[in-house]
Amino acid sequence: MHLEEDITNQMNPNLGLAHRFAAVDLAPNEQLESGFSAIDRERVLVRMDKLYRDTDIIMAVESLGPANGTIVVVDMPKSLSIPGRWRQEEIKMHALRLKRQNGSYTERYEERGLRLYDILEEAGATPFLYFNYWTRVNYDMLIPFRSRSPHGCRALQSAIEHQLGIKSLPTNLAPSSVLESMVGAYASWSVWAGTPGTDYEIFLTDSGYKALIPKARPHMGEARPRKVRRSRRQLRWISSLALNKTDKDKAD
Image (cartoon, rainbow, N blue to C red; front, side, top):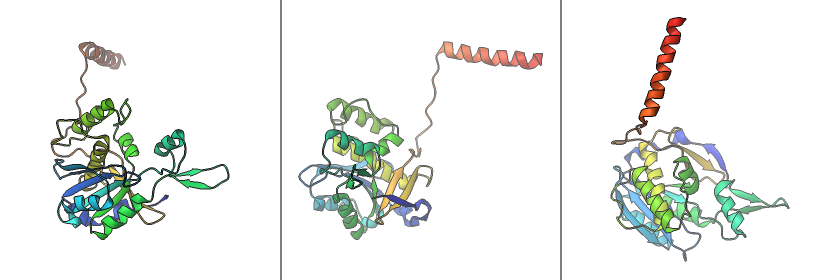
């Protein structure tokens, strides 16, 4: 799978009518849990769950309301056929395929994500493929802990609440797959709330699937730019620079 064509400015204008924004942190197979989350236009969490089967995911999407008013992003699951822990970690950071020494390519991602994309599209929803790790990099949400450890989950949940502004989060610690799907739900919301080309880009893959590349966090509603706080020493230093510049201008 390769990104071939930028179609950011060619998307259907009916995306503006969407009212539910969901994401699936998809597992490679149905024996492992997949995280699911959905938010509304106000970024209020309306559903979070751990699901296993594709049919369960479709039922969860349909429970949100009319499918044609729902945007769903699907995180591409890593291929279990790639041996070695290091190669598994490489999947997060490099191109979509592994090139071996004999010149052949190994697919980095399982086909389950593409199958779910097709099912969602047939159901009337607006699906996109996306990559959760890249999204967190672009949103400046990388955390200094193992992602599935208690410390990592707690840090990610805090970042989701304060950096993404998602409301009605649970008071207890959510599972890591569900937390990662919340990041995807925000990326899904950005397609409705954000500016094309600035906050996100949409590409067609070589197989004709739409892939979402989130770039920045749209600041909507009550969100405000963060104020920079400086100490008194910093303020005195800045004032001295300004006075020195004024004295120099007068001398000139």
